[in-house]
Image (cartoon, rainbow, N blue to C red):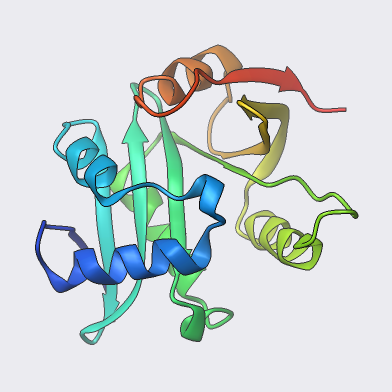
Length: 178
């Protein structure tokens, strides 16, 4: 049975989360342990470890606004991918935030990208789990991410305000997807 619990500093959950952070995300997208644990102390931030019968499966980092939630990080242990854990984690996130629009962003599918296969799989995963492209791109420095949403109406300005609450790197902007 998949369970979620808050990640506490100095625990195995924290160690597993950081190991997964390093393997699941490219260096330019990785957060530091200090950032994650500091932000998790805020009321509007949720940092969860997911376990199945004691085995670490993955983690999620979310920031909550009035009517929407931004999933900054969602990662499943590489040995457990394609076994339904990601879908179950997303379902749990929806239960944590009933009635709210769940948003996230992913690397856009670009045929020239070195990880284009991974990008396609990730996009297909979110589409299968009920997320839809919003038609917006989250621009953060030189990085661009396609914004997806699931739930009631997506409002770009509310999304932008929420993601800019996180004190990391340059302010983000939104651009219309081509």
